[in-house]
Length: 616
Ligand SMILES: Cc1cc2nc3c(=O)[nH]c(=O)nc-3n(C[C@H](O)[C@H](O)[C@H](O)COP(=O)(O)OP(=O)(O)OC[C@H]3O[C@@H](n4cnc5c(N)ncnc54)[C@H](O)[C@@H]3O)c2cc1C
Ligand SMILES: [Zn+2]
Figure (cartoon, helix red, strand yellow):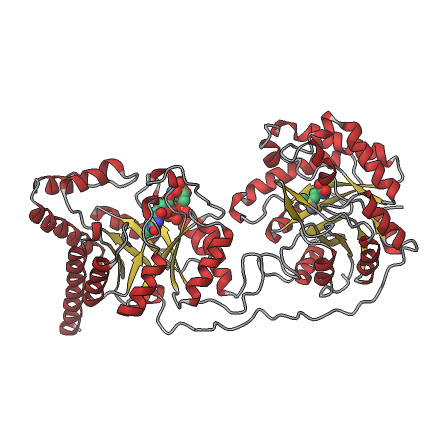
């Protein structure tokens, strides 16, 4: 009888973990390669699960895809490893047991780590081998990212009429990491043609059962669950699970009562766990009715402190807006910095932007000085946040801290890599890319953490992103902007631009976006500064004319300052009618220069208004 016909009649027992049982071969090795080098051991594990009572087993192919095998230099072995896996599982099954061809998810926390095109290519290759070898069904398991699972399920559904089992994995009870409730996700998978929908891994029975309480019985499909043995413990560099096989006896009944028809195990489970479940469900009688629990926590909470100030993106949409960067000091003591911040504030700025250890060199925390300028001077701080210095835990804690301090303006960037800074040996974290960070902040604005857990409040961050127009292919940089907008960016700040032609070029290349851009302008301070930027900073090119003007100042600092300001004013003139937003970068704490430029912008603005009145 086919798998689905059997599921119509009774609860089926699946197998448990494969990887966990192969740990003894070393945690850093490729478990799927053992299909080739230790086939008898794989057969032995399958047989142990069948002997324990499994009606359904899965091939040892969880990570047998191009991306994961490439980590071991085995990318050319996708066909051989998958072929061997099906043969070994079929040999063990010997016609008594259904054999599912397993394909595991690629994306875990970092959505951008594997682009969808790569997901599709990798998936197809593995799927075709498994189907060609004659599996009885396909098991898509450990998908944290619903977009990825929907994508691969759609492909699989087109390619085969065999049963498809689609499993998501959760970090939190009842929700996926993008905040989608489990019930909605499973309904979407059923609508895309999955025959069995459910969840595996990460959670032990307790949290998985809690998650399932909110899930109704599917209309056509069946429910499945492959819990981990427990929550993991970390000992001596490896994940360890409780050896609690007896606990699975009670657990199996509870899963059945939630409407689950296919029950197996994931990480930490062994044939003993499966045996306990098979024993508990000897009659295999399924439930056909279920009372669904309503979600206890509503995530649609309001922002706790709705921002009283207009977001910078809105300002730049409706009027001239000037923001100025003044970087926190590299040494202790902020007196001079505060004098500069006050001077800029008095000159009339909309926000003070504070870099996050730019050029990967430590400075006083921008949150500390941001909070001080906000409280003491009434200045609006715009806090840069890099992905370099904080892991996913640190970033979320940082965002919660900013929200708590009432700071809502942030710039989400990748960050200069550590190796260019004062501590080249320091790790660059990069758990997230700038795209992921923008998405994370957007999700905070929905009241959800990265794992989908409710935060209790919605944040109201206004999300800036970086745009570097000083690149060879401007169209590629604009594509990155478009992607950042899709991820939730509200506006952009550019790297400093040093030619009037470039300003026009940027305008032409971005005018279709309708997303405000603050154009970056940084006054030059000396001929050496100009040469350094031109020759040594990747992507920045100064025109011959500008370099000649700075060179003509020789070593005279007063003249160089005057010339640097004159050049910056000419750039402001070029940008004035094209961009509402101007982002001035203060070089070397020389706020006297940026103050003069702020005044220049305001005077220009006043003159333009006057002209309008006269002519209007
Ligand atoms: C306004 C602004 C503020 C900044 N503030 C800080 C700061 O506070 N602290 C700090 O450490 N750094 C800062 N930087 C520097 C920035 O983090 C680095 O330049 C970083 O490499 C780019 O980050 P991103 O978020 O702009 O780029 P992303 O768009 O996230 O790009 C990240 C990486 O992708 C690659 N890339 C980018 N564009 C292209 C392209 N067109 N084609 C191919 N590959 C590309 C590059 O390798 C780049 O490093 C700032 C940059 C800008 C523009
Ligand atoms: Zn698992």
